[in-house]
Amino acid sequence: MQSPFIDNPAGFEARSQDTICINESHLQHKWYHNFKYLMVGVLFGIGFVKAEVISWFRIQEMFRLQSFHMYGIIGSAVATGIISVWLIRRFRINTIYGEPITFAPKKFNKGQVYGGLLFGLGWALTGACPGPLFAQVGTGASVVAVVLASAVAGTWVYGRFRDWLPH
Image 1 (tube, rainbow, N blue to C red):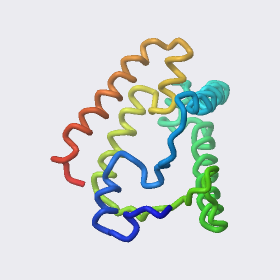
Image 2 (tube, helix red, strand yellow):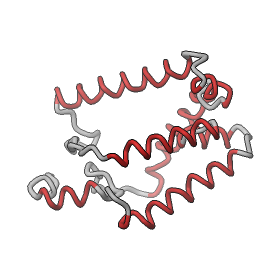
Image 3 (tube, rainbow, N blue to C red):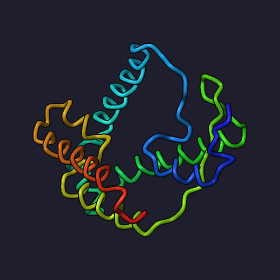
Image 4 (tube, one colour):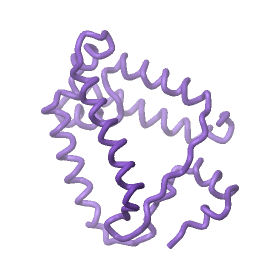
């Protein structure tokens, strides 16, 4: 099934601003189907803990340029992503349900620079980015619940005022 947005550039652009991915599956599954994602998330969180990705100390070392640990982890994730995208494009790999995977071109926007700086500042101040937040709360760092609540509130505020912001 081909997306109707591929033939309609205006619709495609409107869709790319939406919160739903253009590769969104249209298959309907039973409620328990998502447990596999819960299990992957739990394993991912355990990996974060074991690799010390959620360690405030490790994050501070990274921002103070005192250790290569986090840069190595981030660099290996970027390399894995680059290789994965190349393989998907090269061999036209489909999803496990046979649906095609497409990559949409992105336009550069100066707001991305401002957003990246704001994200990095928040990361440096709190010692947490969105992925490890849940693992930090899961390990009992209850003070991080404030950061998690702030991240959720910031996401809501952006969604509420997105139409009035420059994109």
